[in-house]
Length: 153
Length: 153
Image (tube, rainbow over all chains, first blue to last red; front, side):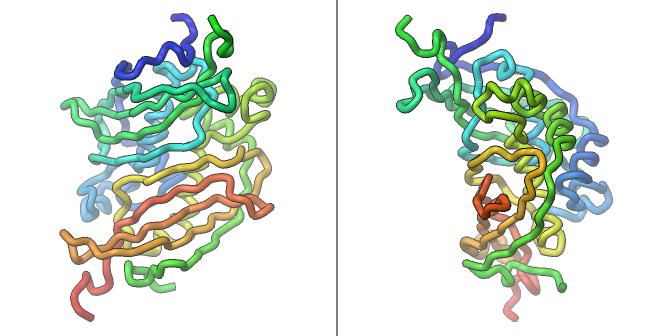
């Protein structure tokens, strides 16, 4: 597939990618390094927490989402990254053995005022479980290079 | 230090923790696993990007912040986690060799209406470089158990 530029993202478009299997080993390894709370490290300790059993750190979910988005389309696009994230929602626990699909929805696009060679594409990214229910969602705007660097085509 | 409950977090309070040294090895290892874009993987390729040189993935910065917050106070508190994040801002590149301090500011607190045994504490978390300038910031509300589970003291 040819490289995707700002012009190629149309509001309403949906891109699906996956599924990816989530393993106990990666949940525990991530938690040990970045989020060593009992509910992400140990089944027994996790049972008495709000999550009711071992579940991935919310930040691990964000990282899995990022990796799936790079593999889905970001690496093959003119993305220059993002200045931040508008919101992150952790909607349901992510358990060992879950198979998650990335659903990317283009929400809106606009050209940069200060840098006409690029634009912003606002996306909703969702990790969706096998039952079709989102387990997490985030909204962010990627800076994307324009085709022909924004010169009139 | 004794365990901290919802009541122990006072709006305006500031908690500092660190610094932590950021290494080239951890920047590249994280990127290879979760965010394999050239600006996070390779000095030469990164030079021509918006970041102007190798810099940590923004998600890596979030994970470092999470780990510093657990070591700072979260593990020694009645935190039950967070339903999400209100906003994340990546303000400046994080480079190999940077030493970052975590600055945690208590913004506001409220008791849960539906679950009086807990409350919410809204925090601003910032990773601050050696020059005192924040390189990233995020706002999130942690669910915290109340002392005596909210029974009148």
